[in-house]
Length: 279
Image (cartoon, rainbow, N blue to C red):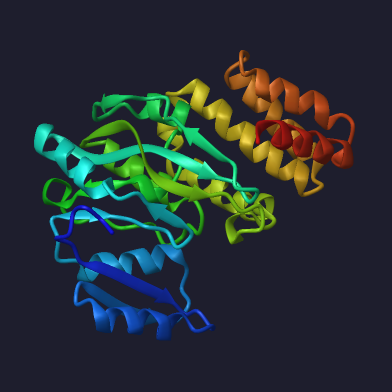
């Protein structure tokens, strides 16, 4: 139902074992804009790179399998590219849809242009909700790819790669529906997966983080929280203290550290309550 009709839709089936492939083929047969690929299960970064390798367009937009573009998503973002030729990546607001049907507007901290090289500012805020909000001007950016060592943080890794050389644009308009599912793959035992992911990102962008105390503090706080949830209290607390040392005004790091003194079960209850109130 997109109001922008000139597109190719590349669907990469990353080794699913249900009827996904048959369903895709049915739609591809009815609409020649749909290109269907199936590969053995290699992870989401590999699936994205497979799609990028065969994409013919000068513009690339992403749609994760549990999100939904609104009708004018492509049209409105492409209009920004025409208005701002220096922009390499565009993102937007989104609607978060909860399992009970409640709808919430997600707004980014930035609006309009974020100029290239603003790594500290971006790392401190980290405000792109979903890769599904993102459109990339491939004609300007050229070849790019996802780091296949990453399973969950590959989108943020990509943003940091691109922001070194290209402007971003934050469109203050909701253009996708983001369906929040507490049981989704990315949220299942996330603290186990995120430890390896964050330690890898931390080593990869160490120079950036050393120059950005607030961002460094945020990384340490997130990593410390994951260790606490993994019942590694001493390691988690040490990382939270590193977060406080990097940026003493990080009140969230203080709150997490003080709550961790009650032990893992108490800390888990604190996070459950925090998320409940946030929802």
